[in-house]
Amino acid sequence: MRFLETIRVESGEVSNLELHNIRLNRTRERFFRDISPIDLREFIKNPPVEGLYRCRVIYSRDIESIEYIPYIPREFKSFKVVESNIDYSYKYVDRGELDNLRLTSGADEVIVEKDGYLTDTTIANIAFFDGKRWITPKNPLLRGTFREKMLLDGLLVEKNIRSDDIKHLLSFALMNAMIGFQLQNGITIDLTDKERIWF
Image (cartoon, rainbow, N blue to C red):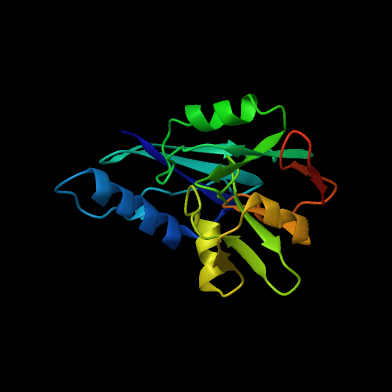
């Protein structure tokens, strides 16, 4: 079993490393025995000093590889709510099931609905503004590090969200380690094949 961490590196600065380190070691403790904690600061050295990079850490029991990939953001115009029982509670290297959901959806990106509630897209956690506060699904597919930071800072509230609730929400945002908190404007979300919401 192989896992990954995706860490933002901009102008040589490594973002949110403590929470990435916590998730990496929590994952290792869950899947491997007789291990010692890893400190990513000992491995992420001499990052690129110019530009925005995705630091991709692949690991299992131990760190297997670290590479710096120039980051090119993706843009989305259409989302679709797709029901699935997929399990991505750990950040696996193998994203085949996630990618298949997106590729077969007919949309740029999907919002996965699981057990009747919204979870995540395939590449980011989600949040909606209800007029008073930003809410994020209580049970995401993956507990992202940027989502965790927003929760710790009191900027997000966890709540169960059904697809039908989207009609009454005012704004939609994506968040992950690379894009931070990114408001989505000029996009559509298909709740069903016949029902579409605009943001």
